[in-house]
Image (cartoon, rainbow, N blue to C red; front, side, top):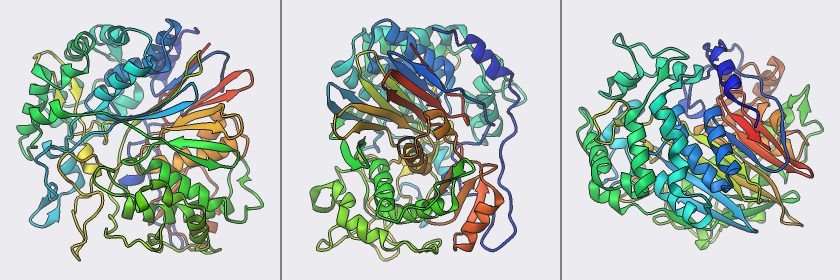
Length: 606
C-alpha cells in the first residue's frame, strides 16, 4: 500500500479554513437563504483529488485514517463488511461530527448475486409522544430541539453492523476495532475540517465532557495538528470488541447514555435502559429499479432516498433530453431546469407519503408503486419550459383509486452524515451511509461511565421526524413522532448492476441531509449516462431544491446559468453545498474510485 501518512500531513497543512458563504444576488427571484436543509455542514474548502485506479479491491471513506483502517482489514483477508466495521470505529474517533457508534446507519451488501439491506436506523423511545418537540402549541427552534436530550434516539449502528458481520464477516469481530483503539489511546491529529466545525459550532462547548475535550480553557478549539487522545472511547471500543454490540445496549455504557439524556439541563429526554436493550436491527428487502441499462438498488423506507432519487431520474427519462447536458464542463441550464423540476415533484411525494414502514402503509402495500411507469409519465407531463416555482409542486397519487389520509410534512433541516463504499477481493460490495444527524449530533457526549477523558457523541436523529404531528386541519403527518418508530431518512446508499449480466457496476452515496438525494442522483447520471470518471463526476458542482428555493453551488456555475434559471421562473440562490460523495466504479481491469473534494475522503486499494 502506498502510505497515506504523508497525505494526512498534507491535509493538515492545507489552509482551507475559509468557508464558502452565501452571496446575495441582484435580479428577479434571487436571494440569499439560511435554509440549513441543503447545507448541513459548513464548508471547509476544496482539496484536489486524483483519479484512483485499483486492480483487486477498493475502499472509499470520508477520512484517510478511516480508509486505511478498512484497507488493512481487506489486506488481512477480511470482507467488505469487516472493513466497514473497522471504518465506522475509526470514524467515531476522527470524524465525530458526522457519524459514530452513538448514531445509526443503512448498509447495502451485495454478495454472490444477492443484495441485502441492513437497517440500523435509530428508534424513538417507547414513551415518545407526537408533540415531542412542541412547546405551547408551537415547534421548538431546530437547534434548541437538536442540542437536547429530546432528540436522542436509540442508536442502531453497532447492532446493525454486528448482524451484518454475522452474515458476511470473515475476521474475528474483536480484531475489527484494534486500529481505532490504538489510535484513540495514542492520539490523532485534528484535521482542518474538524477544527473548522468545532470553531463554528454554537452548542458543543456547553456539554460538560465535549466542551473540555475539544476546546481549551478559553473555549477555543484545539488547533489543526493538535494530537487528541480519547481514552474513554478506547475503553468503550475495547468493551464492544470483547463483548459484542450488547456492550453499549446494557450495563455501564448504556446506563451512562441514558443518564446523560435524562439529565439534560434544559430539555431532558425519556430514553430508557429498556429502550436501549430492546433495539432491533432489521434486514429489509432492497428496492432494485431499472434505469437506462442498469438496475439501481437502494434502501427502502424508512429511507426516502432511493424512492425519491429514482422518481427524479424516472421523470427525467420521460422528458425530451436537452440538446446539451454539459456546458463548459458543468451541467447545462437546460439539464438543471429538468433536474430541479423533477426534484420538486419527487420531494412533494416524499413529504406526503414516506415514513417507517412499520407505521406507514405503502400505496397498495408496495413502495415501488411510487415508481410506476405510468405514474412517472403523468408527473413528467407537469414539467414545461417554465418552472412551477417555489411551492408549485403538489403530491401526486401513485394509485388513483386509493385515498391518502396523510398531510404533507413541511421542510425541516436535515444534517450531517458520512458515506463508505467498498468492493473487496471476492466481489462483495458495500454501500453504507452512517450518521448522528447534525454536526456533533445532540451535542451530548458519553464517556461510557468510565470517567476518562473523551467519549462518543449521541445522535439527534429524532429531529428527522416532523416536529408537528398533524397539520392545522388535524390530518396526521406520516413522519410524525410515535413510540419505537424510526424517523424518515434521506440516506441513499446505492449499488448499481448491469441489467443483462447482473454484474456490479458501482457503489456510491453521500452525506448531505435531504440533498443526499440530489448529490447521489446527479453523480450517478454523470458517471453512467455522461461517461465521466468517478472523480470528475463527484467534483461536478451541485444543484438542489426541496421544492422551494433552488440552490446552485457557489463558484461552480457561470452567472449566466443562474440568470437563465431565474428567467425560467426558478427562485434561485448560490450557497456552499458540502456533499461527501464516495464512489467506486467497476471496470474491465479493476476499479476506479472518486472521493469528494469538499471533505477529507480518500480512496485506497490494490
